[in-house]
Length: 226
Length: 245
Picture (cartoon, one colour):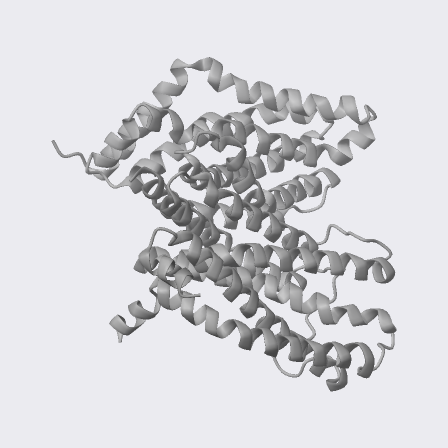
């Protein structure tokens, strides 16, 4: 039976989403982590709202980066452990399509969920309502880019026993520009100036990784799997 | 032409060529760096703003430049090894990574020592400094990924791929002073048109660039020989080479 590229993409995407929603605890854990980390900062630093507002973008972004990093390890790991990944590679479909679908599914259950929760965190960190749109847009672009960078890192470390720390070591330096522009955009939105420049740069990074990172992630998987 | 190239890229010939080049590189590097240091520290006139403190540029700028050059070398060698399956490319990349990381560290340290009298602080979170720091982390990531695999050839290819992905950072560092309004001074040498530096200051700097390149070549050759011996330790030619000494 031959399946078209688009059909294969949809099948893998549906399978990934179905698997995630059958394990809701794993879905919620990164979100709870996100909430807890952002709670730690006001407790550790200061509860004055003006101070809190100044450091809110950085806190929000660092917490979001760490939260999506948590779930990256599982992107290819469980499938590689039980042999599903090899079957997908042997299925005759391009690995590119499979990587594309898996990463998009990862973003939908981790990044997009973080974006949806971010208003709660934003309110807690005293980010004004007017900045919410920019904050959520920048987080959406940033977490999607991070998912792509993470797919490269997860592909490279999938065969390793203790790949988790190494994965962070590889992905975080690449993700630093995201933090700079993402927090910059949110910061500008809070102070009321135009955040367009930083958002454009985030968008450019997002397009760059969406188009090029799948190739890198595919080659990474080929190196570690073959 | 290709058979000649493949023969040259075989481990024994790489080992021999590196051994033959090492003394040349070392001698030339010592002479050129010596001349450059004397010229830079004693002959070049003091800066009208920074006085004698600017002289650290003769170590700082070549280190920073070499940190980028070494990264590019590592990525290109990794790319060649991935595409044409030339094993020695991985050896070159593996030998280059610690050298490049050292140059990056040297650039950061000399830069912060220079920053203290000029900017009043050892460290500022400005684009060029931050991107150079990211470069150091990238080197660390590549160096950590290679030995993480039990199968060395797999580790080689993974590290090569990661270094190619990290190349995105190289133009960002190079142009960070142009794109962002930065505390760091703008490019003074590698500019289109005339460099904005008087010749008496410029030529010692260019001499130091050349000297650092030669020094890099020397260290690379030495490290490459060790790398080749380690990778080929089961091969017959290694045993013969050791016996014949």
